[in-house]
Image (cartoon, rainbow, N blue to C red; front, top):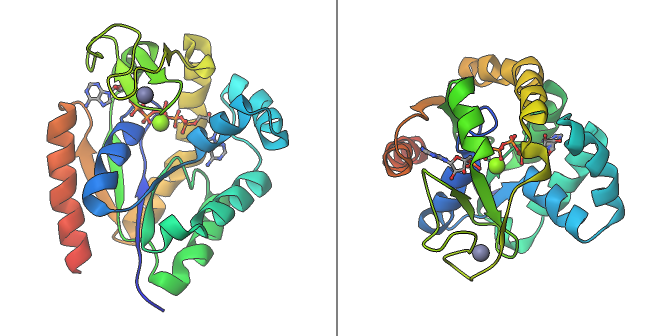
Length: 221
Ligand code: AP5
Ligand code: MG
Ligand code: ZN
């Protein structure tokens, strides 16, 4: 079986996983697979999956593993994932890691796990200023990464909105869930020599260029 490239982004909510993953899509010719985005897409389209996910997402809790794992399994079988994928938001706990390892084992396993480090206070500032395009999903920040025209997407003039789970109380629970459930993955991937630490407090372009160096190195292994 041919080797594929699988990147797994780790980092607190607001660390910049989505921002960095999206930027990599073009240069790596790999799709970003964001479980949060897929849930939000289903919610927008009022599918059964979307309605199920909503109650968990509104609280900042994880959607049940069974549902999430099945969803990712289906997504990774789509033709655009034939060379691999950039995972943003999955796996997120030890059950999901085990399932993911099994999914990617035939293709050489996980390539690299970029961990974007950021302090909680800064993550909170980023999340409360975040705005997302309703049509294309592009992510902005009112201060750090502002669109040319306030409230309007640079790429397709879509309307920018604030995510329902970006209220401060919900963000606090998302941080708690991250440390409790996703935190153990840092040790897991470190032990497998796959972890790549990044300083998420740097400007977006700087994080991206450091990331590219680390990925190039990993691809040569
Ligand atoms: P998800 O959508 O994955 O949210 P999250 O993990 O909380 O992460 P965020 O999207 O908030 O942060 P990010 O790191 O992507 O930051 P971004 O690039 O946008 O999950 C949402 C929910 O879905 C979960 O709570 C759960 O309910 C459910 N779910 C998802 N996956 C699941 C799973 N596997 N299992 C079960 N449930 C699941 O950046 C943030 C802001 O900062 C932006 O405004 C951006 O412009 C700005 N910014 C980014 N980088 C920089 C920088 N370097 N400098 C300045 N500003 C920056
Ligand atoms: Mg995101
Ligand atoms: Zn847009």
